[in-house]
Image (cartoon, rainbow, N blue to C red; front, side, top):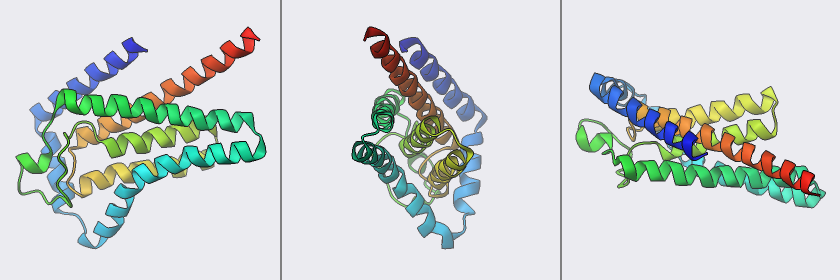
Amino acid sequence: MAKAISKIVAALMLLSVTCSAQNADIRWLRDINLNRSRSLDGSMIALTNSAYAVSAVVPVTELVAGYARHDSALIGKGYSTIAGLGCNFIVAFGLKYAVNRTRPYVTYPDLQPYQHDKDPSFPSGHSSFAFNTATSLYLSFPKWYVAVPAYVWAAGVAFSRLDLGMHYPSDVLAGAVVGMGTSWLAFQGNKWLHQYRKHKH
């Protein structure tokens, strides 16, 4: 697990350096943020604000439904989702302060952010939590009618971070990778733990 995380970190840092060198990040961000439809700002803010709320509601719903139905499988899925969110928090915010990338609107004051956050920019925490939750839902309920709306929502959250001028595109891409990766690691860890307990008994 440690090797996998270290490889992810190295790849993400390389991605950040590459995008910065090509200056593609700021060109794409300016194009999205400065040419956005102002009438959609409210919807974009709502999408952004939904990231942490939905990420909290999903495991709570799984656990409440699981305990109410005495469904051990659903309870396990709820705890697996929580584990994924915990892993995501550690990796995403660990990376934020390890890389310590300045927010784009600080470096480029022509951007129009909807608010000024003080934490570092890389990776996008909102994007990581949204894609972590979407991936947890898909891994727990592998149906297209779960995956499609979950990932459409996660992509909407990620786009809102660009539309609102809060992150570079590479921040958002890195957040999505971290979110999906940590969710998958937690799911595999939970599966291994379940098999270990089964064989032990």
